[in-house]
Length: 625
Image (tube, rainbow, N blue to C red):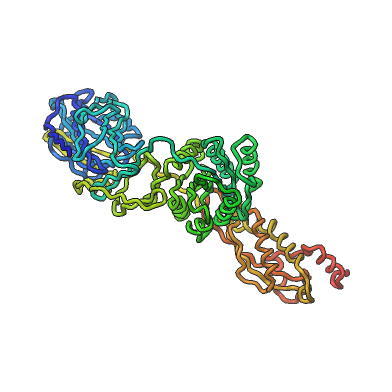
């Protein structure tokens, strides 16, 4: 146990910049004390501050008197009054985008340099297996180096301050450049630090070579929802992943849509020929409707039985856009894998940059799929494909991700969570208990973390007044454009592509008896469209009583190329009411008064669409002049 208590003096010498960092479990309380000297006497003193990511201001004081938070209507008028009383001149400076807080101080010319002290609480991060508190660079025009002192109630192995070993838990921080406080953990592979309900995870990077697979099977989604741009990104990721593994490793690719198509009969080594075959098979012309996730796992199990490996583990790498069929569960895919249940599964979700993100429900299914096998889950940015592929290969060799809640952590990475109630994670396909002694922290620390970073603080110490205001508000992310697919677009696409196929199904029916020749009936077909893909075609109602004809209509629907709305992931349902009869009836004379009006509204048909119907109409007596 190690405890260091440092008392700050009420007044600091001119130009002093001191920091005390109190580390408690997953949190750090940083206390900064400094004097602020203006460039010219009589001017308002300004100090711009950048806080670590996720940090929140806890308290502040001026000359030993606390500053109080308030609303804009309360704080700003009081500070304007203070400026007029002391006779200070307001300073106008450009506010940097990276500034989190701006501290303004109004003091008369004869007043000594005021001492400002503020405290903020920040969560610890993780980098390369070490807990870190990353401090951003200074935003001041002429910054001062800081004298840093670290305190903790537990041992901090190999503590460093700004990259240098800490001597008696003390060190110096640079004036302008970003720096960090880092220390190691004593647990492997996972260490969890708790402070109240705050938890920070950190995985140490394993030493030595990791697991090398015996074979890699790439399961590449080639459905229409991927799109040409997405399919190109999937190809680049598959190539980069193969090239990141040893060249002697054998691989095969199973492309799946409604059907599963292997690239090679058996696994082959990565050569120019095999990579060229991969490029040819990922051309946009190969996009098809449907996404048979269960079928591709079943086909992978069959390929394993035909071409078993003598030793080692098989990797299954699923490369998809993350658009899953409704009702699909991870256990269904794992059950279809059969003898490959012990395979390690990596899931890479790839979408073009301007596409909307994958739905949380689909990501949860894919996360469970990877977590059940000790695998990896990555949402890949198209600009970072090569780096992500190397990271996937390295993480798979090092034991896979650590899955906790709705997040996954590779070795050497971690994250902050504000809820430590669930302390069980999944690692290498098995539950892992992350139990660790908790360190007590002041409740105000946790309350500050849950508070909004916006807000103003004001206070005065004698003739000196101070205002703390938030930095510039970042622009909100661009909203995803959502809308309905126009009915006219769907109608035109189906009229041009589906209607001829439906007619071919009817004309190509088998005739066994007289009733089959004069087959009449109605059928309601419901088409499910999503991301430019025909996901499903369901017969809702039919009077034909011909299962083979209904099956032909469903198959014809999957051959249709449906329009893909821009930046829209919501599904669309189109309902077709089809009428089947041997010939198109010829319109006869109508003596009713509404006949002409109805013809004008609907638009008269000058001739039948079917050529045979046209011949029959010409032979009829009504067609003779």
